[in-house]
Figure 1 (cartoon, rainbow, N blue to C red):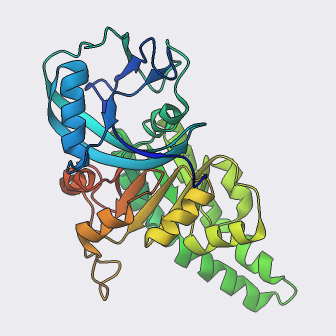
Figure 2 (cartoon, rainbow, N blue to C red):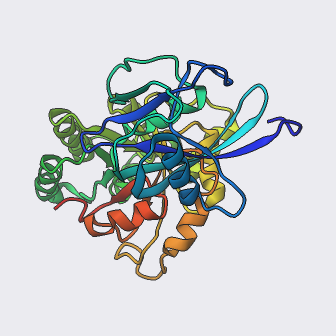
Figure 3 (tube, rainbow, N blue to C red):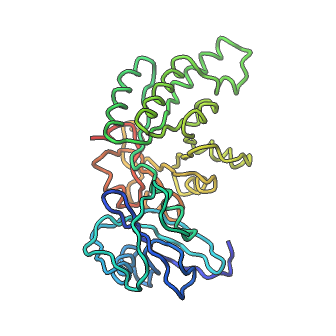
Length: 342
């Protein structure tokens, strides 16, 4: 990005109705990008927090009083004449009926459907795409063939409850299979030992994928599993080391949806450089899967999200009871093995 262009800091609101519809406004005549559609909001004044600036701007621009808003994604976009740092926030509660103070056109749109208005400001396109991402992300925990029936029952319950994003992630099972295979076949190459797994594990993957298909849910495959499985599913969830390797090798972005596991702000930056759809950051709270390691806590989680540039799920100790807390600290939603559904 240019070092000579002015930097502008903006609070932008995604005003969302319960049915998922979103409010857009058309830029008025006489202003830059006249006639283009954008999210309501405006510049953050000195001394204001993001949410204070958002509330003021929406009062001035739309004559509504914000009663519920949470930070979401910090995103930077370079325009021909300036660099805009957008602090996107989700607005889910307000008083009054939105009406333009500058006689600009307003439109309620559904981000998951073809938009009835155009053109969109370039910086408005990413958040509309991110809104299609579910807010609950279930990770599998099958462990072995004997555990499959019980997991499928839990998966069915989660899908029936509305979970629409699932990751097939069985690292211990994958390693047990490849290690056992290598002991009996010395001719197998190291890559084959790691990535050429079938049998019971393959059957489990097919069962999970089919159930997701039946419910219209997306299923990603963890990158520890065979690369050929990634395109059978809806994409891949990369371990941080695998994301780092792809960037170092200059490999193309994997096909389909891409998620990345991260543990700090530097690894979130890796996900952004890879043009991932989202990242998962953790662990946030104490969790049975990491009994010897304390969670980073919500404050550290929020600090890691500064300038993230993409949606981030909170991982570690998450449940339906922590969703509001997670969103208050900037999370897109929550990820976990257990307790994601009622």
